[in-house]
Image 1: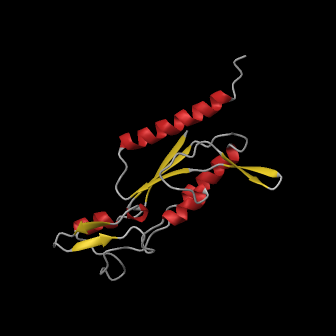
Image 2: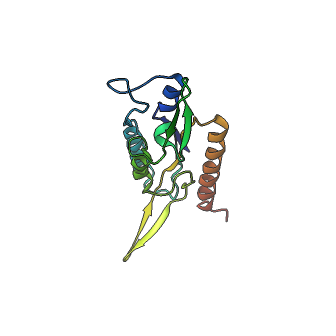
Image 3: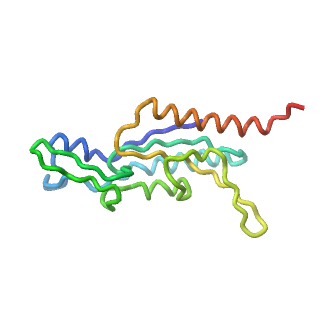
Length: 164
């Protein structure tokens, strides 16, 4: 079981603090960053290591305004309401990370490899389990997800054991 957490997008914190962003310090939002490249590298490295396995127990918790899954309002100290739009191209980076999970649905356990038949060949896909939200992940939330993935991993490993 491998878990990692990434934070990208401090817009909510900045809005709550009344801090404007950008070169001219006149924007509520900063264009999304690129802190996710390391995650892609880590996923590929683990895939190489687990190439002959039937499971891929890799979980990534992504948090921050760049990983919002729904739109919401944030109130600045001066009372102005700022809308964080989850599908804004300026903020959202979920589409950038789903390359590591073969564009599968987020917030789902993909520990068990997916086998796809293409012509005469079976292709085994190892999919990273990506969990995204704007607010910080609580330790208990992450523990529940990791426990589910670990149980899936152990079930798959146990299926290979010969008890005869």
